[in-house]
Length: 350
Ligand SMILES: [Zn+2]
Image (cartoon, rainbow, N blue to C red; front, side, top):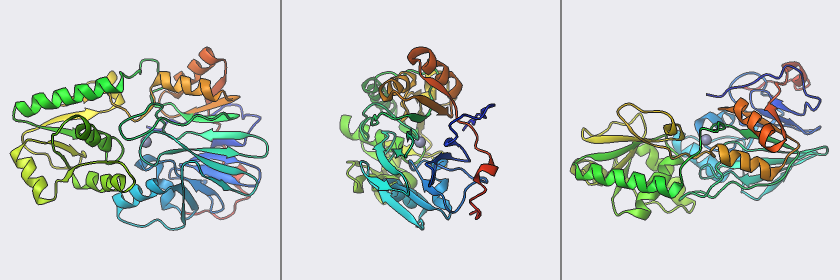
């Protein structure tokens, strides 16, 4: 889903760009954020992971020195059942000194442990958002806003057609549908990925209903990391005896991944921002997203008030035009940094 744009004319300011990850060159340090598989990752680089969703965690599999929040590392390790080597954890609000710069960790509001990174280099300041959400949810707080020179931001829902309903309205719609399905003898089943959204769904039923929530084993593992880090969740693991009994008797909600076996009387739902404009066959859909919508993204840029915005993924071209038109701030795709520019880093890692 990641769309990478190539700038035809190199920017005068080539300290920020795409090199199979977001590269910020501070002069003495080369910092690589959320790298993806491919060439260009060099051992001397410092790798920063923003959150535990799998399209952002390739950096944990490399031999580079890696940084993330504790929660992100714990979710990643819990889901894969293996330890990450040469990894250092930082807290939101904490800063770390690099050779000639400082990197600070800001809350991103996207899921437990998700963060933005601020780089204060000798000649400029930059913020890389990763995935952000700019409103409070039942499990996360809105993304922090800080001013900077260069803002590198996601644009997943950057099109003006993507403006989400109020969260309280979506919560009410989900509870209402669930009640109807249970009365009809069904098991309302939410098919989601393993971390972030499922825990918000669990918390939603814990807060607004007394309906027991059963989670598939993968989601239960990620949920355990949440409870260990202060997110109150009550759920039953479907692999436990009680979970199996619940799924047979039917008076419960089931939260499962796409890979999990579902009960025969499951009534399936998806929760995703794409539901605003897309129908999901055989599913009831709710536009509950962990990302900022178009209006939130534009408002976020207005508050940050950078000299320039680099947008990536999703509706990046549309959002860039909207930022220039509405805010008068230069916005466009990340320039691709040629491999030849990285040649002074001799040792490639896997
Ligand atoms: Zn994400």
